[in-house]
Length: 230
Picture 1: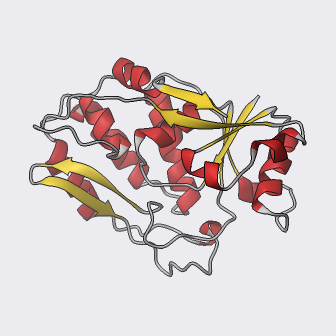
Picture 2: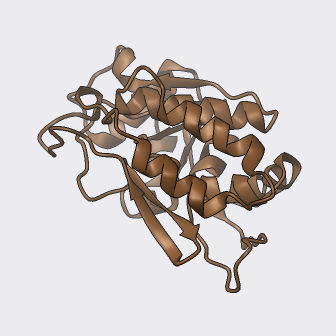
């Protein structure tokens, strides 16, 4: 069983969704510190005027608080207007915009709940069934080191493989995991390209951009363009 754990991000880029796609169970790491100026509450899309950033406020946001203690603002009108204006002519706008609207207006405003809602809705739209849990709802030793917490979570769900994002290569050592019976692998996105409706291709935009321009079948093909390495 393959496990992946990651802080919840708002409509992240396709590499994040590849991590979910590659795992059998995906845990939203919401009992760790909130990261200001990161991608938890913002991302980038393509607009008629070029790349544009959208942000949803998080009242009381502080790096001294845990993600689970914070919620998104209810005011998403400006963000929805920006997305609508940017993609009104995109080929899949009629299907995707209502999905985005439904997610951003989700009644439970906690960061992890809105993000988990988005992952569930998007994978359902793509015809893919995935499993999600929040780490804040689990019983495990939160005083352990970052490495030992991930190993403990792997053991909790009897996962024999833990998949990490590429940035984890500087943080975790394969032998530390394998001594505990868990294989550590890293996911790398292979080169990918899709028609964005603009001149020059811009990588790493929000998944919203991918969904707006690609059919579910095409998105499934892009999700599969990754490799796992040690």
